[in-house]
Length: 322
Length: 313
Image 1 (cartoon, rainbow over the protein chains, first blue to last red):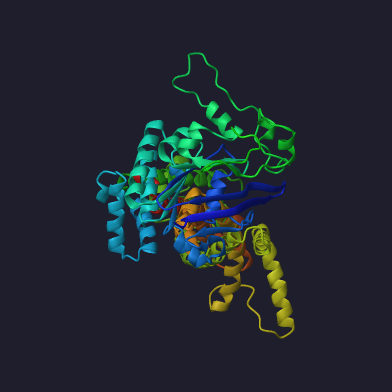
Image 2 (cartoon, each protein chain N blue to C red; image 1 turned 135 degrees about the vertical axis):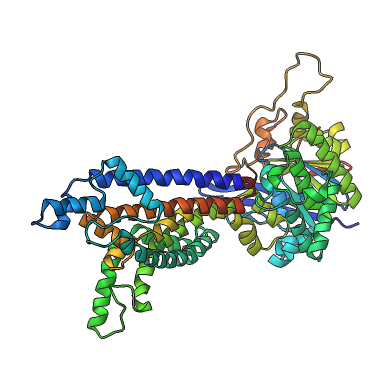
C-alpha cells in the first residue's frame, strides 16, 4: 500500500540577521492512511516547523524549504501552485493549532468559520454549508449546536474553542489531520476529552493523524507509531509499543527516564537531561545529542550517525543504541 | 446597546457644557479693550454705551452672562458679534459650517481611499522596495505641514501663469470646482500619510496573528485572508484613529482655510481671534468640540458593530 504522505529529506531554514537557523534538518517520514503518527521532541526540536512546512504555511522569506520532496498521493506539495495548494489545505490535509484562544478569528461567528472551509472544499451552497457546520459542531460535542453556530469565539471556553477547531479541521473529511500540540494549552481534564474526541472522530472518518506533542503520555495513549525529534533531526522512529518497551536512542531513553512515574518510591529525585540542546545557528559537527549523552564516544563528536534499523520497524540515529 | 448609547450621549452633553464654560471663561478673562467701546468708536455718549451694554447682555454679572450664553446656545443662538455691529454670530458661522464640511469631508474621503490601500499594500510588501518607497513618501506627507506645501503650490502656480500654461487658482472657494482641487488635496496630504502609516502597522500586526495562519491552513485564498480575515480585525484600531481625525478635518482646517481664503469655520475662527470677536470664537470652539465628541460616539458605535466582543459588554 502506498504511503498517504511521504516527506523526503525535508530541510527548513530561517534566514535571520544572526545567520541561518536550521530548524529542520533532513527529515524523512511517512504516514499511512488512517494511522496516527506521533512526533515528539522538546521545544525547538523542529516538530512544528516540520508540520508547517508540509502545508507550506511558513512565511517565505524568512523561511526556506529546501527538501527533496513532500509527496502526498504522488503529488509533490513543494511543486504545487497556489491554487492546487489551497485545494489541498483544509480539503485533503487540515491542521489544528496549539492555542485555541488565538487560532479562531474573533470577529466572525464559529458557524462562518466552519462553513467557510466547507464552502471552499465541498462545493456546497450557503445553506448546506451551514447545515454541515451545525452537524460538525454537534459531532465535536457542543450542545445546542444549531444555536451556538451564531456565537463568537470569545463566547466559548478554551476547550470548547479547540472543539470548534477540530470541527473546522474535520469538516471537509480530510485524509490527514496535522495536530500541532492540540492539548498543550488546555487543562489536564480537558486534554483527555479533546484527545478522546480526536481519536473517536478520526477513527470514524478514517483520517490519518500527525500528532505533534512533547507529552509522552499523549504519545502512549493515542499513537501507533512515533518519531522522536531532536535539534531538527529525527533521532528515533519506532512503533509506540517498541519505543516504550525498548527505546534505542540515548535521547529517547533519557527523555523517558525524566518522566516521574506513579510507581516511583517516595522521595526519588527527578532525572533531568543535563545541558541544553545545541544552538540551531551553529549545529555541532557530530551527533547533536553528543554533548549531553552519557554514552558518547569520540566517534559521536566527529560524525552524524544515520538513521538505521536497529530492530525490525525501529530506527535510531545512534552509534551505540540501547 | 440602548443603555450604552443613552449613557454615552448624557456623558457627551456634560463634556460640551464643560467646553462652553472654559471657552466662555477665556473670552471673559481675556485682556483687551472693552468690546462696547470698540464698537462705539472714539466719541460716544454714556447713554449709548449703556444701551449697547444691555443689548449685548454685558451689564449683568458674569455668571448670569454665562447662563444666558448657555440658554441662547440651547436655542441655537450664539449671540451677537462684537466686531460686526448688527450681525449675529449665526449669520457669520452657519454658512461657514457647510464650507468646512465640504472641504473636510472631501479631504477625508481622499485621504481614506489613498491612505488605507497604500498602507495595506506596504504591509503586504514588507521590507521590499515598494514598502520602503511608499512609506518614505507617506512619512514625507505626514511630516510636512500644510503651511509649507501651500507656498510651494502658490509659487508653482505663479510659474505656470508666467509660462502661459494651464494653472489652478491659489485663493478662494466658491465659483468653480477648480478652486476646490488644491485645498482639498493639500488638506488630505497629512492625513493620507497618517492613515497609510497606521494601516501598515496594524495590518502587519494582524497578519502575524494565529487566526490568519488558521485561515490559510483552511485553504482560504490570499485575497480573502487579507480582506476578510485580516482587514476586519485591523479596522478596530484604525477606527479609533480615523473617527476623531474626521472631526478635526470637517470642523475647520485652520491653516488651509486661512491661506486659501476659504470662508470656513477655521477661517472665521482665526479672524475672530485677531478681531477679539469672542462670541464668534466661542462658537468655533463649541462646534469643534461637538464634532470631536460626536465623532467619538460614532466611532464607539462603529466599534461595537465591527467587534462582537464589545457588543456584549
